[in-house]
Image (tube, rainbow, N blue to C red):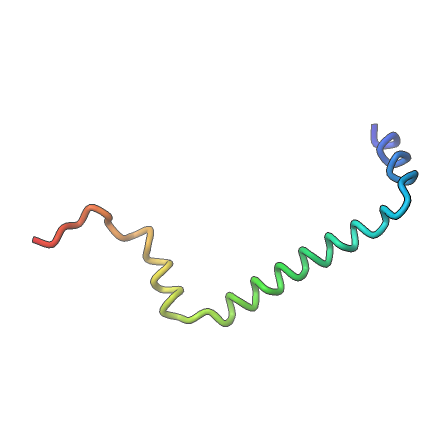
Length: 61
């Protein structure tokens, strides 16, 4: 099965660019994600991290 796919892929002209494009896309995504995490404000991170712990059914009595 793998030999069939490999031989089929080798016959397509210009296919060697796709792995490089996907590597650049994923690398760029993770670099931007890392940059966002490093530059995020502490208050925002604290607020978002506490969201699952908040009770939605609380009422002020």
